[in-house]
Image (cartoon, rainbow, N blue to C red):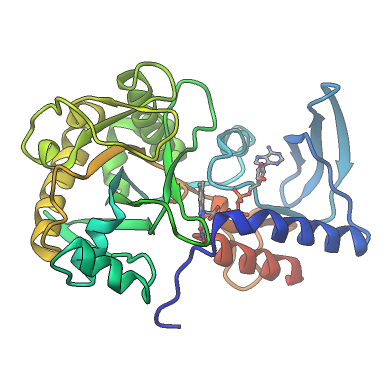
Length: 344
Ligand SMILES: Cc1cc2nc3c(=O)[nH]c(=O)nc-3n(C[C@H](O)[C@H](O)[C@H](O)COP(=O)(O)OP(=O)(O)OC[C@H]3O[C@@H](n4cnc5c(N)ncnc54)[C@H](O)[C@@H]3O)c2cc1C
């Protein structure tokens, strides 16, 4: 329990999802692939119908609703916009954004396993797994911390719309890639969304969109991600070259502060300096940062009652999982799904 890691190995997930689907079908459920929820019809106290678009035929179907578990994840911006448009209560929520940092895994092993040489690392790695880390630092009252650390992992492109660049990370079950990556993010409070206050409950989401669009522009208006060597970033120097990186679409050397803006840039610079003293060798130009890591959790909460799990206004709506703000990661989202399914 103490050493629990959230990453079972992303390569193992497809088989698990297939089994979940089989179970649903065996119990009489129906699954509609390539269909999208596009409308919710409700009166003052409950949802009456939903409209779903068949993406292949571009035709809509309407389903009567007795109970609706809404579990569309934290990237379903169209759903937040739909709820907002339909005057269904949603709230802005604090969340965090920043970058992915990537080091050679061997370097992190050397630090964490206290090895003097590569030979020593190799000896220890005969018995020990690719090492991980967890770092946190308060910078001017704001949390800067590692998130979703992926030993032996890969940085993945995770944009969900046009004209944005979004990074995330994953580890295969063997954790045998030559890189260690982690989100390094800065926590935001509702007051930080002030410049976007005209967007109401969607203020944080607009802030997130803006950062992802900046990354797209600085990356060259493709999925190429903006990047900088770590020490160069901390010292405000453009990197004249970049090390190899696991991010497949490629990276482009830029001044990351121009992508991130003052608030995130300064917080990360100070955070990285502190991490360099906590983990000697971490703050190095062998490492790089790639941007932007912006989908740590949802910027919008769909509220619900603690006991009944129902939306405060619509009694047959059960906001669920990470997109509603009640889970973070696969297991907690899955357990939240079970709780909503069991709710009366
Ligand atoms: C690259 C990557 C690696 C990750 N690795 C890990 C890990 O190792 N461990 C971990 O704990 N977490 C990991 N996560 C996070 C994890 O995937 C999420 O926390 C989890 O999937 C959230 O579950 P959810 O069911 O709430 O939402 P989701 O899994 O996002 O599911 C939402 C579903 O709703 C669908 N949807 C959205 N809008 C609509 C609509 N309008 N109509 C119909 N359907 C819609 C989506 O297509 C999606 O299928 C990773 C995430 C990424 C991107």
